Length: 95
Image 1 (tube, rainbow, N blue to C red):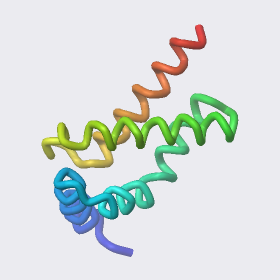
Image 2: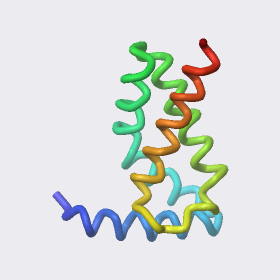
Image 3: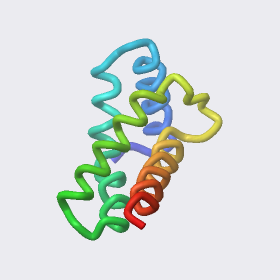
């Protein structure tokens, strides 16, 4: 297993590539982080299909907003925040 610091460096490299339009780089980020995003979504949804839908929405938001990622935090922290906000927004819409 790769040290966490090395993974963060790879993430940052892939983010920079994705910001330049490299879709494969973004696909790498999706593959690397999809399980944690799904776990966050499942905690809110308690339904596997809904959690998948929410996860997809998270990655759509991340893709659309990737150019705004400045690197002040790790990509995983930035993505986790998007996941939380997506789930909170969904919960608000259901209320």
